[in-house]
Image: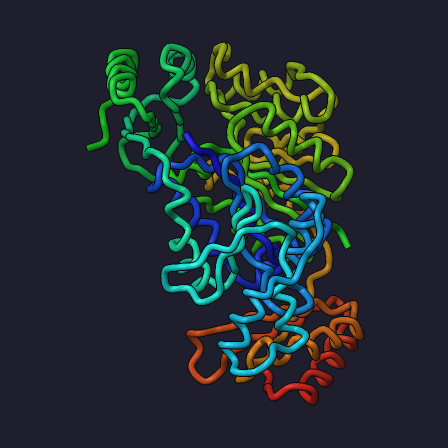
Length: 238
Length: 238
C-alpha cells in the first residue's frame, strides 16, 4: 500500500497564531483515499529546518506532501528548503512567469517572480480548478498554506494519492486496560495484518476501554474481533 | 528564550481514528507560557520511529515533550523508543511498582509492570493532582496520550516550561501580497527582533491580507508597526 508523510510549514502554526486545518485535512483525506500517513511534522519557515526534514523523508515514503511557504514574501522559503534538502538548486520556469503575466496583465514584479523559481527538474501539474500549477519534485508534492487554496490543490492532485481504504470496527469493555493488555498483545501477535488500538475512556458512561481494529483484509479483521469477543468481557460498538 | 519540540506518538492520530487534541493544547499553552515551540512531529507506535525522532531532537531544544504510548499494552512503546534514541536501556523502578501496588491493593500484573520500566537514570516528578509521576529523561518530558490525564500531567510540570510571552499585533490591508512583499521584506530585515507573518484572506470582507507582528521587545514591535503603517495601505486590527 502507498505510504505518505506530511510536512506542515509555518511559524504561525507553531506559535499558535493560527490553528492548523491543513494537517487534519490531510489525515482525513488520506484515510478516505486509503494511503497510509506514516509521519507528520510541523516546522518553521526556515530554509535549513525544511531542508533537514525533506532530506529525512526522502526515499522513505511514496509521497511527501508539504503545505505552506510558497508565496511571494520573505518568509516563503519552502521551495528553497526542498531544493537544499534534495541537493539541487532553484531554476526559473518560463511557464510560471507566463501564468503570472496573464493573471496580472503585466510583467510580474520581483517578489512575484520568487514563485516562478522551483527546484530543478520539478514537474508541473495543471488542471482542476487551479490556475497556478502544483509543483511536484520527485515524491514531494508542494501545496500552499492558505486553507481554501490548499484544499483546491490537494483535490487537484488527489488521484496520485489513491490507495486502498482499511476496514475498521471497535469493541468496548468495562475492564481495565492493565487487566486485558496481555490478551490484546496475544491477538496482536496472532493477527499481524490487524492494527489493534487500546484507549482508556473516562467520559463514556458504562465502559472504560475502547479497542479499535483496522485492516485491509476482511477475514483477519473478523477473526480477530471474534477472538477478542471470547477473550475479553466486551461487545462490539454498533 | 527557552525552546521546545513536541513528539506526538500514536497510530490513531496518523490514521485519523481520533483527532489530536494534545498537540493543539501544547501549542496554546507554550504560547501562553512564553516558550518557543520550534518543531512538532507525529510518529507511529513503533520503537524505531520514536527512537529516530528522539535522536534527532536530542540536544537541539531546551525541552522535548512526548505524548502517548506509555500505557500497559503492546502498542505502548514510547519509553523503549526514548531509551533507544538516547542510547540507553530501561530499568525497573521500585517506586513505580509501589505506586501500582497501592493503587490496586495487590501485586501488579506483567502488563502493568511494563509501566514501571523507564530509561536508566530518568527523574520522577511527583505532585499536583497526579498519582503516577511524570518521567523526565534529560530534556525529554514524557506525557500520556489520554487527553484528560495528559492535561493534568502537563500542568503538573508546566513550571518547567515558563519562558517570556511575546507581544503581538496585526495589520490588515486591501493590497495584494505580491504588491507588498518587497516592503514586508524590508521591514523584516530592519527589525530582526520582530517576527512578521503575511496571510492572504479571501473570507474577510473588505481586506485581503493579514499581517501579523510578534516580538518579545516592545519598542521594535511598535517601531515596525509604525514603519509598515507608512509603507503600506493598511490599518491596525483593533
